[in-house]
Image (cartoon, rainbow, N blue to C red; front, side, top):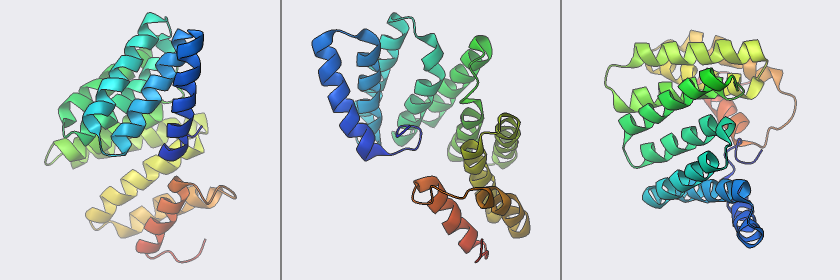
Length: 208
């Protein structure tokens, strides 16, 4: 859960514990998980190259252990680390691989977030990609709504609202984001909700 919520400090502590335990006990799957966790936390801390290396090793461990169902999620983390190293097109390729695996395996819990992240990387990598990115964000929102995955819907709404704000579509941005944020009645200390509230305030919404 801390990984999903992008809580790097907690993930880092858990990763060290997990790697130590699984190295001693020889649990290949959990060693791969701990290695990937460590890679992600290193990338988040600014050491993208070391993070990419450990994430790749973790993914190789998942493949060796037969845990293909985990790969879309961890490929997305690898794509994020590649983006921190300014290898945006490499990251986009990894997200495409993750979406292809999602379709093949039918494990769709992370599908909306994959589309959202692809939209964000398009904006970072390709000048003039706003229309493509908007399509990805809209698709992410539609999937999240179908799955009733409110966290993914919120993240996707934030991404699209930011894009619209940059295009002077302030009313549309407010109208999209405010109802999604308003659905939540707890968890206001997590980063996603803090960022959503800050964006709404910036858009001129001062009561929720």
